[in-house]
Image 1 (cartoon, helix red, strand yellow):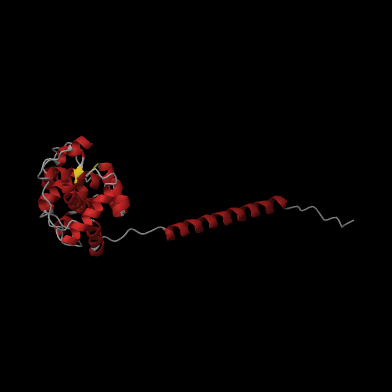
Image 2 (spheres, one colour; image 1 turned 60 degrees about the horizontal axis):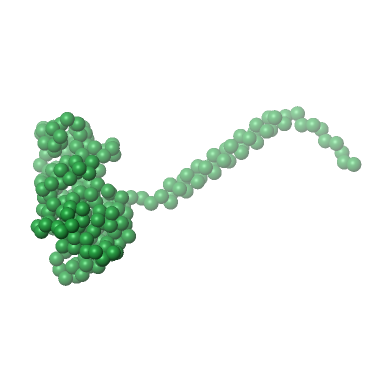
Length: 246
C-alpha cells in the first residue's frame, strides 16, 4: 500500500506547456539541421583566372605534341566503342566522366552550340553527316566548348533574373559589364544594339543565348579574368541549327 497522491488540477495547462516545449525543441532541431545543411553546401567556384586555366587544361586544344597526345587520349575516352566518331550523347557523357567538369556537363546549351559550331566550322566534309564529330574535328569541339562556356558565363551575368532570356532592362543595366568585355556599347545606343542582337526582329522582346553568343563572337568579347585562348572561327549556321534544336 502506498500513499495516494492528489489529482493534479493543472494537467491540461502542463500538457500545453509540454507540447510547446516539444514543438520548440523540434523547431530548434530543424533549424539546426538546416543550418548544418547550409554550412555543408558547396559554394560556387569563383570564375577567376585559375578557373579558366583549369578549364583549358581539361580541354587540351593546343597544337604542341603534348597537347596532341592528351587530346588523343581524351578522344579515346569519349569514344569507348572505338568507331572514330562521336555522337552528341557520347560528348555529353565524356564531359562528365572523362573531362570531369560538372559545370560544362550541366550546361547543355554550351554543349549543343559547341557541337554545332565544330561541325559548321570543319573544313572537310564529314563522312557521317552533321550528327557526329569525327577525330579531325575534335580539336575544334574542345575550342568551342571552352569558348561557349565563357559566353554562357557572360550571358548568365547579364540575365539577372535567371530565366534564360535577356530583357532590354537587363541589357541596359549590364552596359558597364559589356563595355568591360569589349562590346563597345553605351547607354545611348543600348536599345539599338539590343534590337540588332534580337534577330527575331524584336518580335519576342528578349535575347536568347544563341543570339547573344553569335553577337559576342562577332564582337570578340572576352572576360577580364579569362586567360588567353585561341580565337575560334565564327560559326556560319549556328542560329539555323539552334532553331532546329529548339
